[in-house]
Image (cartoon, rainbow, N blue to C red; front, side):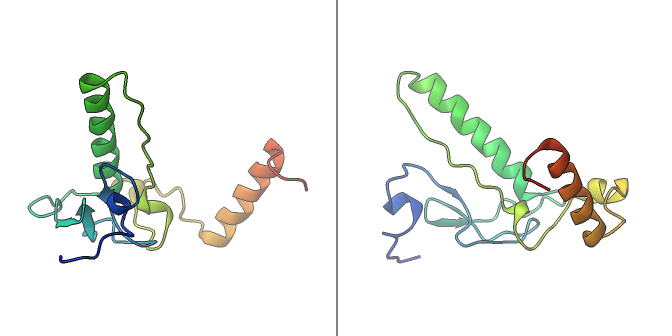
Length: 122
């Protein structure tokens, strides 16, 4: 809580920061900060998911920027944590069963689709 925060986003030129420091955090109970202040938006919210919270916060931020200063340029760096370990998925997604075949098979399917799309050569 006492810093230094010079290497945090708000110390490196960003006017506003909401997110986590580091490469990963829990999607259910993240180590989350607003500016440099720890926040716990998951308390009293059994359906909390970090990805959804960050997306809604980002949309709200863009809407506020546009409403209050439409002529002012801004940059939003949106980096959701769900693409990093730990890979947490909402219960509804898991219930769909679309990844029940496992990681190795999913990797094969993903690579085959990328080859089909020409993303990388065979």
